[in-house]
Image (cartoon, rainbow, N blue to C red; front, side):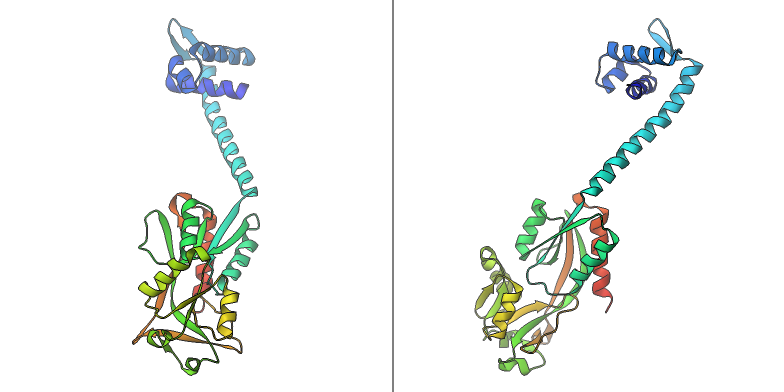
Length: 297
């Protein structure tokens, strides 16, 4: 009780009014007067000298006031820090990444981050570009590793990771696999394999066809592993971006850079998160991933 009474006492002195202090503390004027009187009775001293409708601090009251301010500030800091520690005990970082992503650095960055911040529970999901965008917008993930398909928005932190080249993974059974590079015109003769959920197939095809210029027909796989099995069986080619270190091609697949005329097809990759949800751990994870991706450059 004395802590609350101390707050009422400080409010009366700061406001220089019982009425204003009562409004600030959301109690009646008579109640705050009674609480100050009870405080004085508890301490056995007069803190406020009342005369008619005016009051002044006694020397004892002045001493008590100055120390109350310091103690109440410490109490507020104690409460704030206790709540922060309690929140950290249940802290989680929800990360989304592209379903077609195959670089090795994401796995390593998660391992490095978890070693440095063991108190953070990391949850991982994947999806298409549009699915990740919706997850981030609706708050079901905290940050996403995604390709850039829109102009940057001021609502998000747009942490640019790198520009990366686009490759076509082809079966060694395909004659194009013997080349050093492959063009979009040559790839139009082969089905393009896209990694997508059923709901996002039209959106993925439209982007690769109308924005990137991939022609021909399209077939779909719901996971990167299934897409690569389709490549091995020579059903089509799989477009892959070199976001960091790609896994070895193996004995059945050849990975060729894709060109449009003399220009290499490049993509921009970023980590995105909402500005209004920014916290230290998001920034640390993005920085960890960026360092791993740029170490070999």
